[in-house]
Image 1 (cartoon, helix red, strand yellow):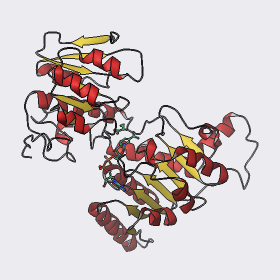
Image 2: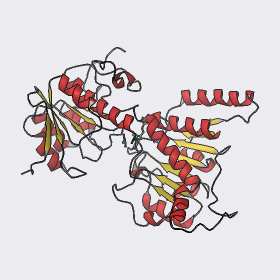
Image 3: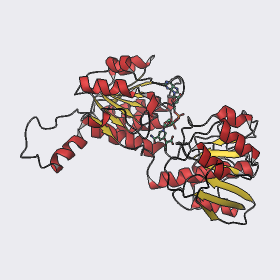
Image 4: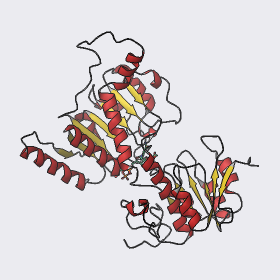
Length: 386
Ligand SMILES: NC(=O)c1ccc[n+]([C@@H]2O[C@H](COP(=O)([O-])OP(=O)(O)OC[C@H]3O[C@@H](n4cnc5c(N)ncnc54)[C@H](O)[C@@H]3O)[C@@H](O)[C@H]2O)c1
Ligand SMILES: O=C(O)[C@H](O)CO
């Protein structure tokens, strides 16, 4: 028997029952659901990661849709239960959905939503912050100051890496990878090398145009190169940032061999998913190469770090906060709620998940569509005309 979980209820007489497994930032998402006749139940249990059993208790006997979190295991058991309870939709409050078994959801006729776009710049900014923190040894230097160890300027004190004119390498040049690349190119005049399964045409055009602009102003132009293999990026780049999805093809993409391919003084940033990096191999590499530095937002066994990582001075580690800006988190909550609402109301799916801005405009009602359903095609759902 599942244990009861604490909930907060909004609009108790609403026709549709929508459950959120966590309180989420802002109130717009709640108001949008209430306006469309939903009873909203928010789990307020003081437990960071809910188990499958906890979520089964939340779903109960009648549930039209659930908004869930990337820490939860959305597989066969939960989708079967949601479907039995009459549920039509689930949305992750995240763009990544490697915690969701989309095939199982499709089998039970449940639509799966995610929250693209609204977190692109915020996540890229954290990757840029980690790049700076790691290259200029900010955290080490901060600890040194606070420990009262500073007794005067020295030529060798916390010497790090200059970014200007160096090469930034991006693995996975999708929305976030491209936004990060632009920040590093515009901000620090870095050259770009990237690896992706697809050509990042807009990014290439941007670098070409920016390079021409710099040249016209008498500055060294920036350049770009699409690598034919990931190893080419690892060999050539001074700063490498990981932004692919996590799937079978990207699990342990960075391992003992790929680490050995990188420059001894390279900077590696991971704001994608922890298992993209073999963290045991990374700890060993950090030990053997003190000038190699990493900035990590995600970890292989979250919330834990592999033994030894916490002791490494050449690692900057933060707790999966890349999308944590107020505007973005409120927007993620809104998109997740609208994904669920749209399916419950029988709306079509938005035609372009890369253009979700109309759903985020607080001064106008959102379009009558689900902003991003990843199994829309498999479920044969109609698409809205933009
Ligand atoms: N740390 C965080 O808080 C945080 C925040 C947002 C997103 N993310 C992660 O970032 C990922 C990317 O988000 P996005 O919006 O940019 O997605 P996206 O789909 O726009 O970009 C992903 C890119 O990865 C590429 N790719 C897939 N397999 C690859 C492979 N084997 N080798 C190289 N490239 C490959 C794809 O072609 C695509 O261009 C998400 O799936 C999520 O896991 C993390
Ligand atoms: O995939 C995502 O969206 C992140 O990991 C959290 O914002």
